[in-house]
Image 1 (cartoon, one colour):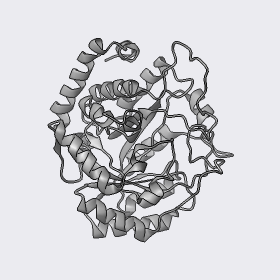
Image 2 (cartoon, rainbow, N blue to C red):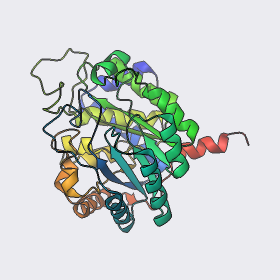
Image 3 (cartoon, helix red, strand yellow):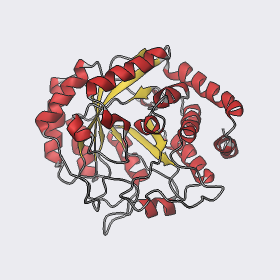
Image 4 (cartoon, one colour):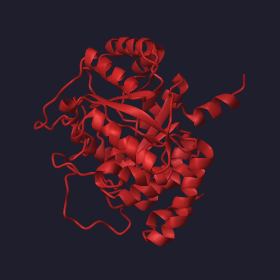
Length: 352
């Protein structure tokens, strides 16, 4: 599939004409990663952030947001909950929080690995190479770092770097792969100023980077950010935001181009389409769901975007809802860690 083919599908809005895309993505998913859905326990360990990203409710200038940071004991308790629920992975997510010390997290990773069979995924933003190496040495298995857009000018408008630094998430993804992580990237869909052409470039970049995990979801405006909802009419080539349909098109195209990669049906899609968001993702290429296991008093404060679907349920309620939806589709629930088949392919092909 080439750039022009991707553009064709991104611009297509007719439900009937999109059916072949949905069928192809679902067929590729079934052939390459199967019908089992992997469940990852999402644990939002801190909502502190030093960055000033124009789209995120966790941004440092948002003074209206009460801040929290989970303790090691709280995190360990949540990991044991993940095991009891049958999840194979814990995904520890936070803002770019300098209060999460490198040795502290390394010790915690060792405790989790010693006490549970969980794979550990980290999603902590941009950290120095030494931190990433220390956490990998401690036992972390995966790292998720969405690059949000491959359009450099757009990226710098929405994601200003720390003073005196330059943000280069593509370079960090290469470092993660070199360190032996399962590396995950992804983009937002519908960022103000994003075009169909740049979004097509993003999808092709997924294939070039040979990622093991890819998360895509709609941009959802947050009222306490510079990109808060606006009434202006977008340019015809601009991607509409907060669209479950657009997110599903990107998901389907990504599955076709990256058949062995783990692709989640994201919480953002479920937030935009609460009635069937997760189901649509699973029917259009996804093979992963990340049920939230964050204690509810914290989950409600992890406001990367407003009205987050998972902030309204306890971990037990989310688990029951997700299981019911998966089984209703005739899919099964996977067991074990759910390691990336793409990484296993790469390791098998590497010279000994």
